[in-house]
Image (cartoon, rainbow, N blue to C red; front, side, top):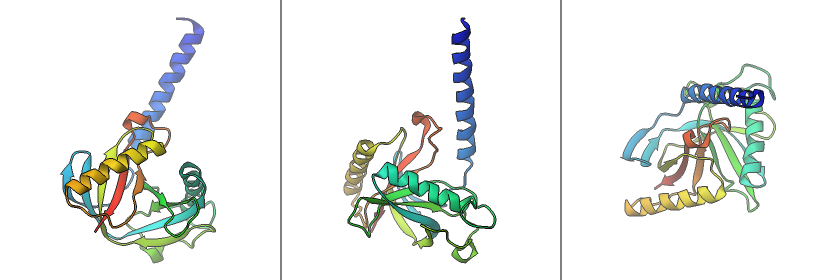
Amino acid sequence: MSKARWIAAAAAGTAAVAAAAYYLNERNTEKPDYDLLIDEGKFALRAYPEMVVAETVQAGSRETAMGNGFRVLADYIFARSRPGEKIAMTAPILCDADPDSDEDSWRTRFVMPGKYREDDLPPESPGMIVTKMPARRVAVFRFSGAPDDDVLAAKKAELAEWMEANSLEAEGPAEFAFYNSPFIPGPIRRNEIWIPVA
């Protein structure tokens, strides 16, 4: 094997090991509890309790707004935009179109670790708020891959068909739930579409 090919192979191996380490770490990240009401493989109906979240709304396309939103919320939980202790990262990161705006803007949410109540959290940083998401039921479609807008639209349509077949009525717009960082290869990423159910 030539030196160049050996270096390329070594770099690929290092990247694979790093991705595996990220993946194992992210599998152990805290996730909100829920009751599983229907389980049909990639489709499910879950009941989530009330959750405390940090959220921000940013303008632009989904990817741009979510990237900017992620930075605002990461600065908050990692104590870069405020004094005090860090807050552990959880999964998933939630994203949906801003319901209070006619413009192209998106809301990004980090679910706070279960040990926190709203009053236990540090003061809010500029550009974000801490709030509660009420207890609710959500229909879920789980899939892997690197989701672009076309993929998300197609998966959302599949979930809507499943809901119709199961006589489940939507109570709000779709939300996107992302469980992994961009370091994780597409085939093993966990993504979900959530639609609140009446």
